[in-house]
Image (cartoon, rainbow, N blue to C red; front, side, top):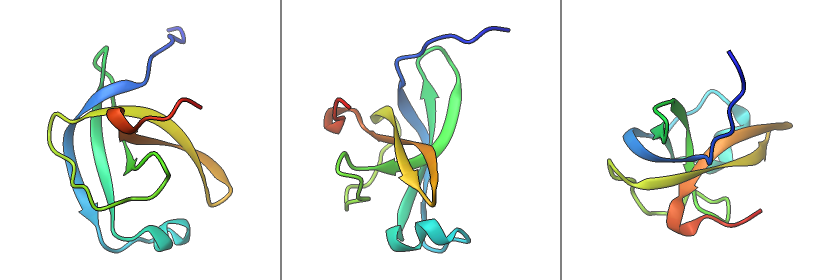
Length: 91
């Protein structure tokens, strides 16, 4: 096994909207989207879907939407999240 670089792009294959959370760090973001994303070479990652500005916004995801992996600070930790590919900001 070895580490392989990945561009962090993929497509939504499943999603749900969360209205209640057990994590205090996410309380201010309710409701929010959890998405399952198939990354380009076949890996799957589940995480939040956010807008490029970090907010959840009012757009609903759709199966097949293109997304880009990025990272956000939440509750004292850096976590992977997805944003719509057309909104991605170069960091």
